[in-house]
Length: 83
Image (cartoon, rainbow, N blue to C red; front, side, top):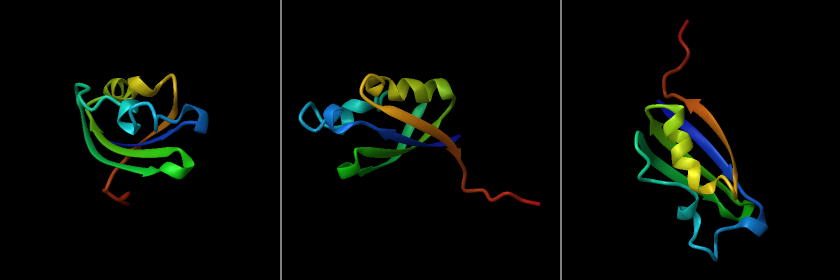
């Protein structure tokens, strides 16, 4: 299943000088594949598109950022709603 993750942090919690945005997620988390990552860095927002086996895998992916960020996780699909 695909998920769109919107991860935000405050300017005070910005990882810019502490390893960068890659410190906010675990790309090696089991059961997840990072498909895309985009940043609105001036707004301290990062968007991820991930493919995951479970919500638990998404949580493990986000684990490094939990003390610094908040995140919303939205299931997404390319398939339109059919009648």
